[in-house]
Length: 371
Image 1 (spheres, helix red, strand yellow):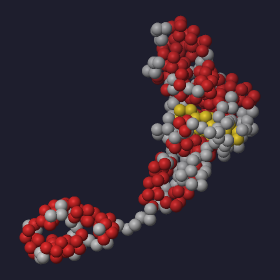
Image 2 (cartoon, rainbow, N blue to C red):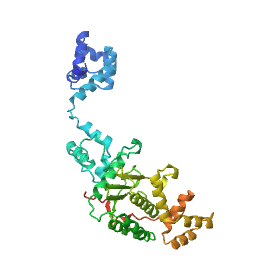
Image 3 (cartoon, one colour):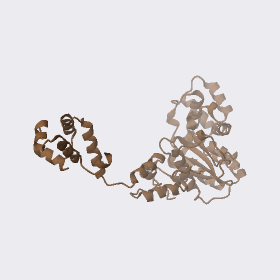
């Protein structure tokens, strides 16, 4: 019946029902209380069966209304021009990839051609098939599936990798990076000083890029390796605060110094502000300690807290920061983490993104890097 319904209108079945009963169109019209013209148009396929008509036909012919509604639905579907699977192919892309966000960001060009769209995703992720695993790592070891990044995170990582690969800088030298740490430390006193970070890291052979975060990805930063001699530090500036910037940057630089992630190609750091100390790996604990110590010496912050607790007055925090030659927001960030008081002196956690991105290779916030 389904096959016939796709070819013939329901009126054909209505004609057969009338012939079986020996009823005329006029008699059926009188039974259901509708014009004869309606019955004629239904049989000719000029009128569609409405729910009201389906109930009347079902009651008069003893078939139930569902039969007539099903016949009408199948007939209407059969008249729609076939899509050749285009909708299903497009849905498949949207199910796996953040299509809309990637088009919005300029990573993928909007197009009505499904073939062109599919090819763009194959090229972006470097795969031969849309079902294939995304090979981000250059020397990947077997990884627990629970540790694998989400597709949102993979898209962000692939974008960061693509633009980082375009940088032409000096060869990486660990000794130079260690020597650069004091130079970077001297920049902690003011937000505008962050504009020098990209240049200093480039001189050490560290590729530094900034990629706007994808909503929902919760990426703070990443350390990955294009080759064993080409480290990349990518930041999202998801939390645009001076304390978060320096903590995440120093965290990623420690990964580089320790050559973390070389066995799998990358280290992805998610929501560093909200990760409890007991829930991190040994690599993350090492990087967290280096970052915290770099921002404010643990002996200094512990001594300060012992002297002023429980009265953390604003002027004392500012004077303490001045003595350390760091911005007050960096001290505030450490106090917040130690005390669990994330509302404390938040006005000092000033923004730095405009200064960082003025010199760093950046993709996002309205600027599309043509990679």
